[in-house]
Image (cartoon, rainbow, N blue to C red):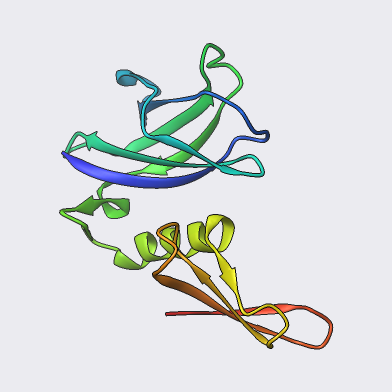
Length: 143
């Protein structure tokens, strides 16, 4: 088994989301998954699933619980996964997820200083540093 993290845009807040693993032939793999979702705000949700079969490669289908026809898909395979806290093949993909989550749901400090820092959802780990120009535009740099 391997673990996977996604940031999901559910289009609105207050949803109870579900997920379904789907192989490349379009067949459901396992049963509907309704756990592991955390609402981040603004229609965004974090999802962690720790029971992806080792040999699985395909898609994960996300949808509001009870309406699997209103869905959106994302690629899922071992190259996207975590194995004991480390990416199986592409650590950059997981790090990017952490950085995105920090920028979307983390604490932003340094407003007005020209440099803003987004921390992870733990409130401590620095994920993204933004340089802010005179017009308020942010240019990110990743640590």
